[in-house]
Length: 307
Image (cartoon, rainbow, N blue to C red; front, side):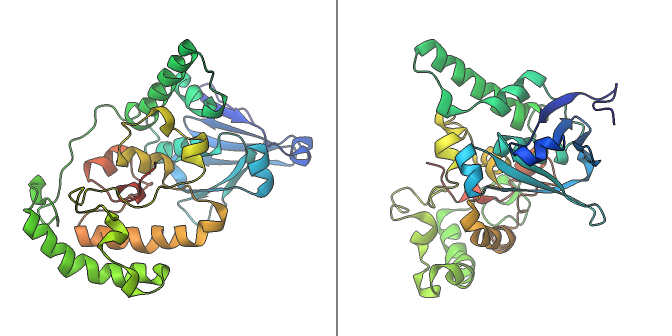
């Protein structure tokens, strides 16, 4: 199989960091049209327009080697998942695949993609010129991944029945407090109580933190997520201005392997439930970044901090 074809652009290629898989010639390629896995015993491919959910896992060996495995599920159940085993820069690559799957027509800058996939803050130099260069790389990468892909961002438009800001007009403090007490707290005690040890353990502080009132109940305020990708090898070291929507796009699928069960509950029960209460959509990786941002979609990082 020829990859890329004359009308395709190769965005990334890699090989599994596993001896046996390398012996059979296994390698992976991402173009602006499809994702391909090639080996001597056969080839698998998945068009970007068919990309559904992207799952990322790490074994103990992966953590030691700095690799991870991506499982890319198709939107159609008849298509088998495509697996990229033991690859480097897995978190960054997964984010790109998610975003490209949401908008396969996106125009990418190859150098920005290369920088986004290759940058590792653990390898940054100590000198001022090198540090400045690293900052520029991160700014360029984040811009290309989350904004540059889709052009000028569409303004946020809240629905007429939005619980907090109908038609974009924020309700009064008293109205919001009544909504939280009447609608949110009963739901939170039942839903979060299942993972907090009982409904009596769920209070305003569960989501807003002990200093919630002093912070005027601003979100995000819940414990930092995810670990270790953000603090140890992620994008946050030089990107203090990254907003919740961008974090949802880049980190939304990340969870430590031992926390996958809780992460699945949060993703499948808590996030959609909170979105329904607010009359907003839950963050949807099958839609574009611009769509999620313009609809103020609810994701993990509207509640969870990263630092």
